[in-house]
Amino acid sequence: MQNSLTIGVLALQGDYDAHAQALADVGATPKLVRAPQELTNAQGLILPGGESTTFLKFLEREGLLDSLREYVATHPTFGTCAGCILLAKEVLQPAQASLGVLDATVERNAYGRQVDSSIQIGETSLPGGPLEMVYIRAPRIQKTGKDVEILAERDGFPVLVRQKHLLAATFHPELSADRRVHRYFVQMVEEFAASRFGSSSRQKTTDQP
Image 1 (spheres, rainbow, N blue to C red):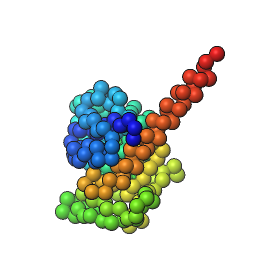
Image 2: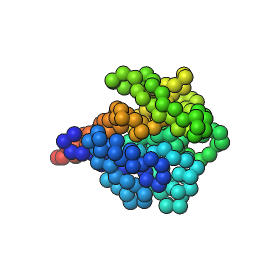
Image 3: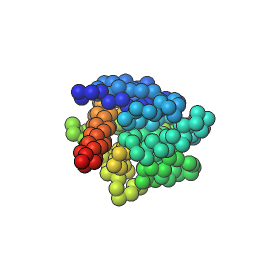
Image 4: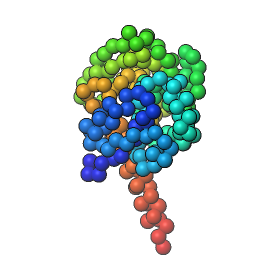
C-alpha cells in the first residue's frame, strides 16, 4: 500500500488490541473507536469478539449505536465472533437486537462454553491453503441469504462469509499468526475506497462544462 488505510477497531470490550496489531502487521493503520466522532476518517471498521449483549449495552451507553448502524450500512465492516452476531439480521439462543445488515441467522454460543474452545484447521477459498481458526464460545451461522458468499465452513456450516462490503467470521483470526483474513479485509477496504474515489472522479469529470 502506498498510503496506509486507517481502519477502526471498536474498542469497548473484547480483543481489540489483537485486531489492531493484526491490522498493523498487514500494513494498515489501526484506530481505536470508543465514541461516534472516532468513526470519522475510518475507511473500514472491525467489530471484535467479546460478549454481544454487553456490546449492545456499551454501544447505547456511549451513544454509539445509531452512528454504528449508519456506518456499517455503507462502509467496509468486519465482525468476528460477537461482532458477527452484531452484524446479523437474526440472532438466536436467545433472540436479541443487532445491527441487522448481514443477511444471516446466527446462533449464539453454538460450539459450547469457554471450556469447549478449540483450534481447528479448515479449508478456505482464500489463497494459501488451509486456515487456522481459533474458536472461543463461538456462534454458528445457521443460514445465509443468496448474496452472502461462503469463504470457509466447519461441519457444513459457514464460518467465514462475505456480503458485498461486509465480512464476518465466527472464529478469532486475530489470535492466529496467519494474517490472511485481515489482509483480505484490508483488500476489501482498498477496493471500496478505490471504487468511491473512481466514482467521484467520474462524476467530477461529467459535471465539467
